[in-house]
Length: 177
Image (cartoon, rainbow, N blue to C red; front, side, top):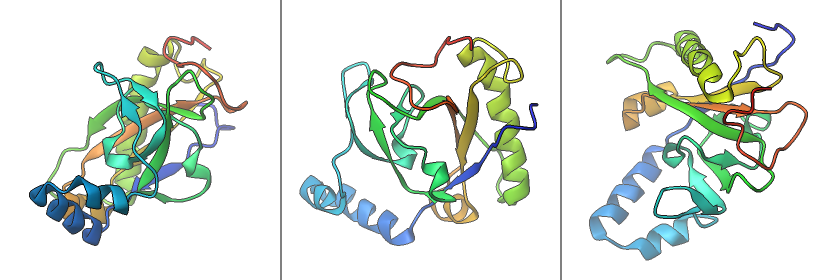
């Protein structure tokens, strides 16, 4: 691995109060309350699931192929929401893979980082078209926190690729650079 790259760890954050509110909203079927709680509307997807209009998405609802307009890793260690846009618009990162960490007990921050790094590196070349060592692109990931693991049963790691040179206005899938 190129030691000059700066791979940052980003963890998901889950707030018990938010989970309770969301559960209440889901049970009541009251989407108006959910809209009031959300600062910005969620991204709009077409029938195929592709983002066609940007918005603020819960970090648990982003999907492979989603593009994020700002590198939230530069701002915070824990992330709960991310701005998502169509990949044809300028963006910093694109979700290129997702996988789960197995186990009943939280593995600890260091082991969670190791598992996320290994999993994201294993998927990098398939998405980009070059191995990480050969590529000019970089990656980061969102991984569970101990809190989200225990309170929200979060096991998901989301891998994101970006260009250290700046924003792009296209998908990096198959970029081979």
